[in-house]
Length: 401
Ligand code: ATP
Ligand code: MG
Image (cartoon, rainbow, N blue to C red):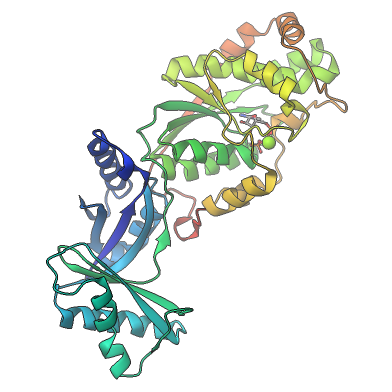
């Protein structure tokens, strides 16, 4: 079986100073972890990550690179000797593939990292297309080419086209640990993804109201967790049964406060789970003004329950921006499956819009729910999702922005 090579360009970590090596080590460890069992070899050299594997592992490698946080782009390349003849052959091969995919014009982009190579990048651009032009395969168009073929001269020469965008950000595991409040909705998976892209490792807590919420609702959250785990290099999902807490809220709280108090109780539970799992912050998918529980006043109330920093990476984004990312990372299609979430149970017709922290605290105390919440956290189920592709088949679908 022929071996193939992929090149990936490093992202923000190249701006790091004396601790750059730590970020690089983490990036290499992450891609190795995502490719356990795929027989791939990985090295990082002079600002490029190289992944080599047998052709039969190409789907696994491409899936892993598409989910790898910390790279700005990646491509499958032809590696050849650093001779003009070999580069021209490789460019020709790439142009043949481009023609098969319908291209009629092309241009070369060249990068000479090895300054000992006799031609500079302009010279490479001029000379590399020779065979393609002599054989009239494709015409050169430097303004609007159908195909861009890149030549990079490094320890060897690499020729590729169709570079994919990478996830950018900082390698997962370099930015502390958070606990994501993960519902089956559209927003919280995107919030998790955004924090993973800042290097954060995540656990997630999902609150369900079984048997009022169906099993499918939990499976949906598990499928989302499996997607996030691929970006975040594993994720542990804590499924917390909150039925007793919700029933207590329904029995004892004014109707208008039900949703806000449910959020308040979720944060109380998240405090306990964060303490138990060593998370340093909580993460939610709230966005200012999106729904009644997310007015500035109500978000202030929710936050007052938190004993950890409560991060809200989507706070200034609108729904369309959030949906675009959700589609790109592959969670949107799962999130829109129509299973009822616990928040929609017992939800008030006219929720309070501008609650105050002191007043809400008193209502919370009247619930006498601390023991119920502690018990829910004690008996919750935890499930770990791995960095490798699991039962949700998504590899080709990632389109990060
Ligand atoms: P999402 O915001 O994920 O689309 P949603 O719109 O159903 O879900 P909101 O009412 O906007 O939820 O809730 C705000 C935030 O509260 C969510 O983004 C999430 O972080 C948290 N949250 C809501 N419901 C749950 C739940 N059942 N389990 C865990 N966290 C939840
Ligand atoms: Mg929401």
